[in-house]
Length: 223
Ligand code: DHB
Ligand code: MG
Image (cartoon, rainbow, N blue to C red):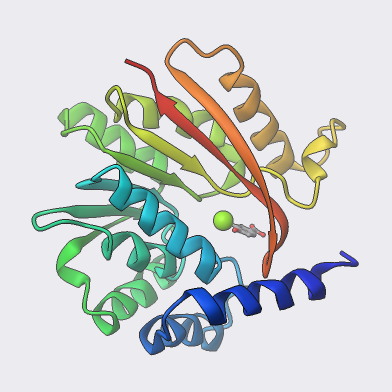
């Protein structure tokens, strides 16, 4: 979009002033680029936001859908108190392999458990096993299945659990009701499920920055 370069410059300005230099995270992004992966990871400022959110709610058990190259996973792992854990779900083996290297690079391997395979299947196993509910859940996997994932994620939550879903705006494509783009369709159906949902209160924030114009949805499971 026309303003992306400007948004990126503002993000760089803010990063330079607010975030400590972080060669390890730079290396994680470097490894993602070197592997030929597209720049889909959260931005540094967004990563710092996720970490602060996790710390603010005292998250001890964090679930992530969609590890990708592990960039957001490292941020989330850094928020954990002693004994905390991130479980992250990744369908693509090449991404999971790269992420494991990135976790080692960042010295957080012991805090992260990566589960390979479809998020749907991994979550069903956890639901059937009756695992302890998660405190924070970051949804960032395939947008097509967000309507399914929210159902599963709620079965892995407790009152007070905070759920953040990435990429719910996509340069405003979310307004396209033609049904042509499956990702847009998925996000729209997901958001419609949140309307008057008995279990959650929800909001969303549009964002601009190095990832263009997009947004997060945020949900909190009601008491
Ligand atoms: C895409 C996916 C993401 O999770 C993201 O943050 C940006 C882009 C994509 O599929 O294009
Ligand atoms: Mg994303």
